Image 1 (cartoon, rainbow, N blue to C red):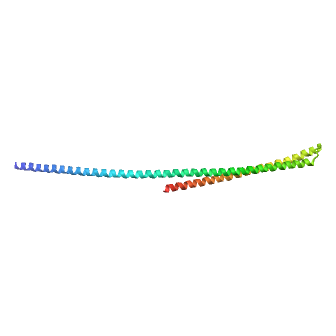
Image 2: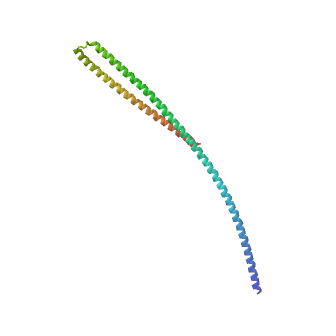
Image 3: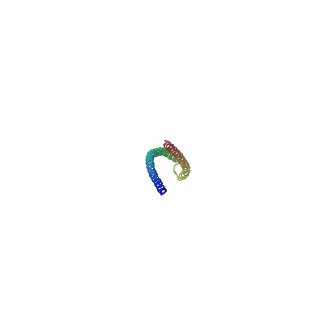
Length: 192
């Protein structure tokens, strides 16, 4: 029986030791788990803080770039308006010059016609035969006048065509230059 009691005592001692060691292990695991949870919470908080800071910085950079882009767009639009206004002024000035030249040519043609009629009148005594001759001479002069007017009309069309081509080229060049300036400004904004 003594063996039984010794075995029971040993078993109880082993049980007690196992329970004590298990309790101690649970306590150590609980402490380590708490430490790990605390460390993870600290790291998570720091990560959230860093993410928030970086997000704020990115938002600030985006806001600055957007403001710069809007400024560049506004400047480009203003430049385009200025170019268009300058071109419009040039077109109006050339149109006025052309109109003045045409008016001068018409005044000169009118003066030539009046002089020719006076020369023809002076040559005739205005008898019936003279009137027929006057009619024929006048017909000849009017035909010459029609030819002159046709030439002036053709010259006028050519001048207008040249002005149109010239200003089309000017506008195209101005818009190209404005576009290049806008792209250059945008690249500066992107670079900064």
